[in-house]
Amino acid sequence: MARDFREYLEEATRHERFGRYFKEIGIGFKLVMSIQASALHGCDPVETLDDVYGYKAFEVSVRQVSKPIEAPKIGAWSDLRAKPWAESFDREEFRRDMVRENVPVDEVQTIFEDIIEYARDKGHMEDGEEPRLLDPDEPIRPLRKGCGGCAAKK
Image 1 (cartoon, rainbow, N blue to C red):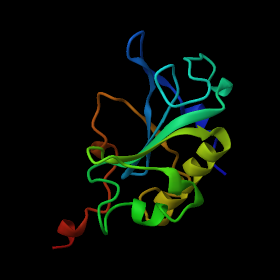
Image 2 (tube, rainbow, N blue to C red):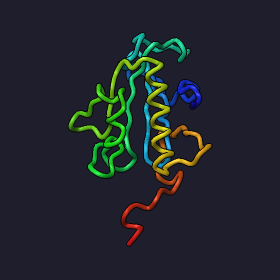
Image 3 (cartoon, rainbow, N blue to C red):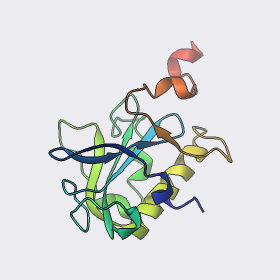
């Protein structure tokens, strides 16, 4: 079992008008999970609490670093969509991520653990490797080289 996802929630920005945003969580070299809660997010309660353990539900999104998560053959959603929690996630046409509002705490933990398991199963994350917080001002790719993709095999 992975650590409680709330241990990873570190505030990146807070603004009266634009709300508070937590840093995204990098899982392996391919997936990024965003877990948000503030007065401007789909969470419960819909307010900006200083104690993340005070929330009953969060707004969650999952995306890939370079391609849309639903891209055929290379999108992680091909596998993740079979999970019971995936059914109510959606992706609007202009977005590259899957998103869902008001996800209960226990379900966010399940999603977090399932994504870590997926990343390890696919070789995107080593056994014992922990998810990492992503600085919003730094690119994700240089943190770890992946498999190289199909082009690397030529």
